[in-house]
Length: 226
Image (cartoon, rainbow, N blue to C red):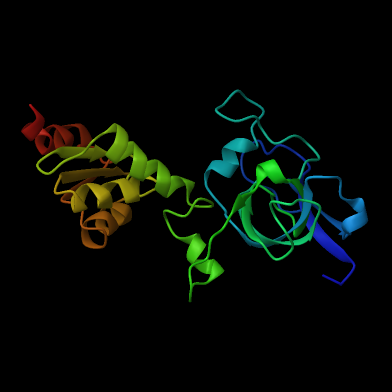
């Protein structure tokens, strides 16, 4: 990228199956805005880190979901961490680190209401905000944390079954449950994932739901619930 331009990635076609390089997305080169392009309450945001999540594939489908699909021609949606380079906001002066849904773009003009300040502790780094429980892009970690502790109220001695256990949310759910003293059974889609859950993450047991004897194995593993 030169000093005067930046790159953004836009949805060009909705994929029917796999993402097609050169067809699904379109790369555009744009002029970098300056302070005179901003309205009151707006900032120029420079992306430093972009989260890439499995959920993004679902956002490309033109179907009803928990969030509207990305429109054709729009910048591809994505959570980001970045820095303010120009500002007409009293809340977010130049040099402020923030999180935002700026999408797949090196720069973006954003409204101050759509930003969340990143507080970097003394001797900390902006990359510390990339952790599992960071506000963005750590949504999956926060979902696991509050879902299990505030809603599920897991406690020592509980038996926790985690579907999608090798995924971004499920893998964190299982680890938190173990820390709370629960017994954890993970469900995943391959033998390699099952092995990872047990040997790397410390799940008490894990099952491959694609295995021919899954139903029998699941009933055996969950006898403690009956």
